[in-house]
Image (cartoon, rainbow, N blue to C red; front, side, top):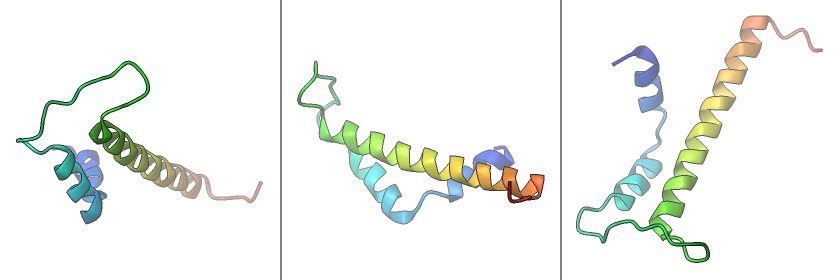
Length: 74
């Protein structure tokens, strides 16, 4: 496993891990894509979880980039 993958793996918070596990229940019915209107709530939950994770990673990467540049204030 690469160091980047290890960093990303440790950024998942306990609550998010539980949400993801709930969305992946084995005995639940199969996820289905519906044509507009009534999406599977588990897909919505997964999309939100992945969106939060992506936003957090992007924010961290931007801050690291700014720190390396030496924030000059402009």
